[in-house]
Length: 508
Image 1: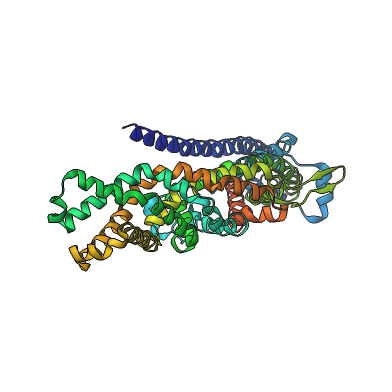
Image 2 (image 1 turned 30 degrees about the vertical axis):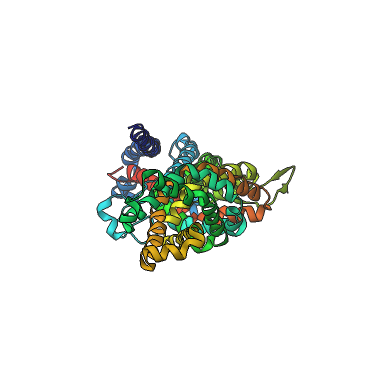
């Protein structure tokens, strides 16, 4: 019951995080659209007042009907300098506010683009999932899945390859387990199970012989057989250490866990890159403001010289602001790779400057979510190479049975028959394989300490030169950076288009 409550609380927490993120996403979009709408509506009202004034004073020579449509005549290139010196009829305040609106658009598009990188975890709407392109966040008929959840399996495979080539030697990792200590950790659960298995197999294969003995004699025989149990368990772990690549597919394990638990992949990215994602969000405001100044000057010139073109500039500049702010933000995170002197200060990519902190957080989450004893053993027992692992346990069990019987093997075969002995030997082996998933968890705590995955990965990551450190994590999502950038651009264009509709449609 307690476990059920904990699971329910965990699911509720995950749902709460997703709901909170979606709520923030909606709020930021609404804020951007509201500010854009306020600016556009005020600008549109001002244009309408100007057009009414122009309508009353326009001469027939310049075409009153055309004036009613556009609010002022289109100016020829020969008068451009005069018109620019005269200035626009639009109040200067509406130009001054453009950089601030652009800053908000830059911030909001970056925030929303990041949320679209992580959410939703599954393709939405689910009814259109059949049209989703494999490994892509979008579908041919619409819909969206977060970029990282959509690529969870591929990213996990890349990360596993990079980790095992630069950070972790799996065979060396398992070599840190001391066989005797492993046997001692497993014995409290395994020994009673082995005793029960031996007694049950004897009762099944030699019922007359077994049942004719008093219980004390039966218990004595089992106890004598169990004298070498810890040696058997130590032999199993030694055999595993020597053949770990034959029974453990680490990449298959990591990919499976990533696909089954997309929220864990999202969590790893969010927590490891928490500081960098804040930079992306905040830099959108500053870069947006800078681009807004360029937009303000351009919009002023176009609005003065060729007002019919000023409307379409809004979605164009919206796309440019959203695209450029994301591009610059990502460059700030990973470039320059090495500390570089610029004027009076030294600059380096924000992610690379935090190498020690990133290494600590990544190695901690890697063990918590992926490379821990529980996941490693479950992969061996139930994963792609489970038959090979089962055979490893069985051959050690057969050897244990032969050693236990020892010199009496010939007499045993004579009493029970060679076939019955072979069946007992195989049944004991198979039952031990079946019993292992229930017993081995008792040793996880010891194994997690002995494997030292967190400490090993952390030390290796901290010791990498900056270019190799960048090469461990950046390639995981590097090929999908363009999607994040384009999403930002499209969101900016959407806001710009909304402004354009409010300003230039409906007779405004």
